[in-house]
Length: 576
Image (cartoon, rainbow, N blue to C red; front, side, top):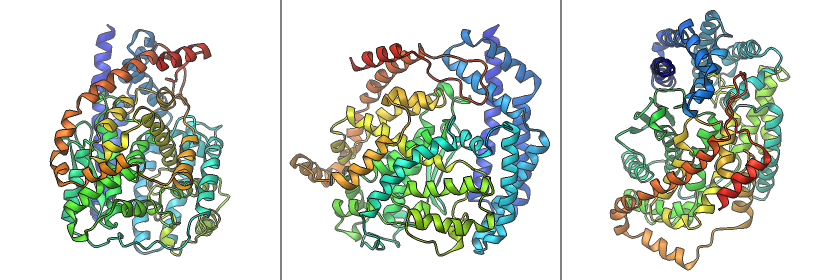
């Protein structure tokens, strides 16, 4: 009987996820490739699919099925129990909103997105203000329906990272902000001019370079595509169909970093356990974990000295007209610190300051302490206080980011969560791979791929993010590793290669290495299996401490529940 109910449940799950996929593809198309006149019908298309999803996930047959399985959690496997829990949470959530409200919500979101495009094109911030005001009002109504006693902005924050509220984020940002501003005060404030700022280059050569690069990082071109278009983003069309894109308006080296960032998102989506495909376990939650993989590739690997040596070989091969390339100059270029008005152009150090400014502005517009008409002035005050610069154009107001037009309120802090998680994972990874740099110099990313694949990516939404990170790093998600990384990188330890690394650089610069890179990667395939066994043991131990709590709505219920003694025993076993 239970097996039959589970089969029916997963059949319905697949239908829901199919509609979700179509909605995501159309929504991404609306934001990136759709012609302006198509806006007239796209809102109706999205509303139609949204209604179909709501019907599939809230009719009596489905809700009764989920409620029955929810009452049988103790008899289900961990995978089935987790999936049913997420389904029950979704039902509790969706039942709060009427069909009329969902239609108003979807239309206002679509109108806001189109208004932002017009306002940015015409540099007319006032045109966007009434649409943003309506969005804020509806967003607050949305939050009040969900929980009339909670702070509306906290509800939106919780949607991107469970249990995180305004007060918790303030505590997280404090040490990161202090450290970043302290380091920034010791850097030059003059504009950055470098001969590696290459704005005009052959797009086809960049494409060829990135194709070789992402394949070395284990991007499978039989399951994904890569293109250069107007704006970078990653689009997951569900199993075995991932699209990554980078913009064509960035300098050469920044374009390569953008490709690494989007590739990180792709690796997160495409390498989830195949057993989770077409279920609600396939999506990774929250976005902070997703962003951690992009930040790992873009910052902790892409801006590292070993990667700059490897990148030097690719640039020599694909862009010989700019020869001679030099790893030290590439490293200097990619790690220069200079306050920047545009968030997406910000360096690694000041990026989190941009996030904090937006986090502060969102709080203030939600409680109306800053009227929308005064947001540009308030933004200028925050930029001057924290970055010591003032934006010159209103386009760099809320118009530079599309998050508010897309109703992604509370999303910005997820970027900093991603940076923190990436730093914590980096500490665990480099603890087990003390000589990781030499492999990257030689273009071998197999150990990186294997470790992150089996520690993070394959689990999808199987575990609560706090439990997932604690199991790997032995600590809760916190800013300590990120603060330490920033201090070490910018204040304490400039890169100074030893003789063995100098020899590795010579090997990396050898043309013969380019030929044999694929052979090296094939030889190291066995490391994937080795790391999987290691992490399987870890998560097997964790399963014994999982507690399925059947009465939680707002909180994610699959948190690891264990006593102090149980935790100590688990740590001791892992150390052995």
